Length: 609
Image (cartoon, rainbow, N blue to C red; front, side, top):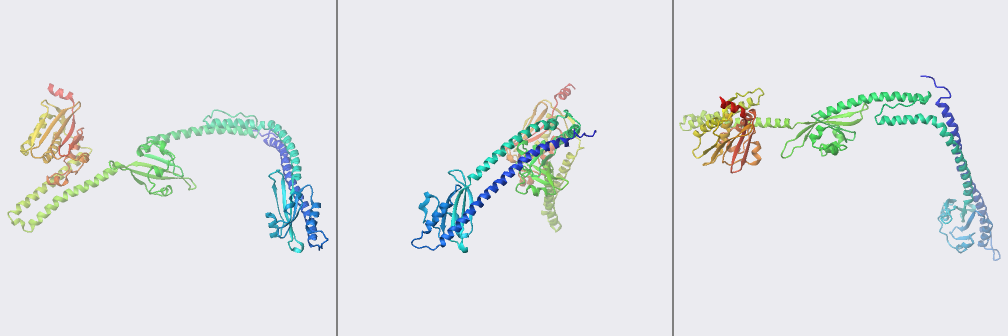
């Protein structure tokens, strides 16, 4: 880079500008001079007036100490004579007041009525009390002139005998100052005009490239990095322009890199399944991704700039400061009476290198399913423990009784043994059902499917129950006569039907009907079993397929149920690709529905064979 010449140097240009600034400095000095001159003139006016007042005070002292007879003039007359000689153009009024605040005389011929009366002037009272001169400047509201008031105590021998109260006009002093200010203002205006004209021509050499750089900066702020600054010379400003162009290039590259990283981050945040929220140092939300909006069920407009404490509903437990100190994650319970909804909020504080907190990152995980699984696991363990403990307790009691000698009683012993056998069978059924559910839960479980005429197959299952049912219960069959071929695991669907029909028989009243239906749909068949029993409350309908769930626990156990029959039925039907549900009205009966996949093409093939 070339060395800058002396006449191209910006220092030379600045020296020229400084020469012009000296002219402005002279004007500043002139203003300072006027201020000092005003102060001196005001002070000289006060000093001159005070000297005259001092002389008047001396004459008043002499008049007050003068011995008087009947032929001598009175004190008031002497004071009037003294005041007549004291009055000048600047002095508006002079009053002589004795130590009792009584006016002894005034120079104002229109105010002679106050002579002999007590004065109420506050400055007079202050001078009498303090023994010091009291003065101040003010503006007369009537004339607008600046006035000066002074109260000078008369102290012959140190004893206060009275006060000289003077009101003087300072308008002459300030009139002179106005003339001086006018002259200074005129000179300053001429100097400023010359400075402005010269400054316009001289500053263009500096402002033109700077203006060009300003335009470039504005273009850069709008994202336009293609524009370049024109280099007018090789002085310091020229070098600055070249540096500015180099900076533009570097910023363009940095912006491209930053934009790429921003897009990557935006893509990551957008496609994250976890919710992410970022706050500023005051806890206000500045960033939230779509997953967090969906998790919290809020809109972006309502939460941006809102407090993270309010959005997460932590106002009763935390402030933002205490939240920053929380080392562990938080569990947020948004559950309602109808639905469980649990979130885990993982916290990460954003800190600068100095340790200053700059914000907070909150990552939201939906752990509702995990909580449901944990809750179901706890309930499952509790139910299994309860279901096993009941028969074991009964068996223990009866076996202890037999061990203590009840086996000798020919009537009691057989009954005790029979109850023990029944409870053993009940535990075996429970364990078998649990094993069955365990197999259905395993991922590698496979169904042994085969093609079955479902109409004939359903009749066979019903026939088996027809032989053992109570004579007071009537079976009603509404099953199509034509063959319906579907591919199922016959043993597993038999178990489903056994569980459903067994429940219908258990809860059907004497003389009731159990209705069996099969209906062909477009791509599935609908199977239903209806009874006329006590029904299921509406609140319990969605839970009847849960494991160990019983609507009437006492009655179910009495009838020998394990609470797993419908749960197994649901797992089997779902494994076949179908659905199962219940409809019921209290005191009118219950209907269990389930569907199984059905393909008519396969059915036609069977007919061709």
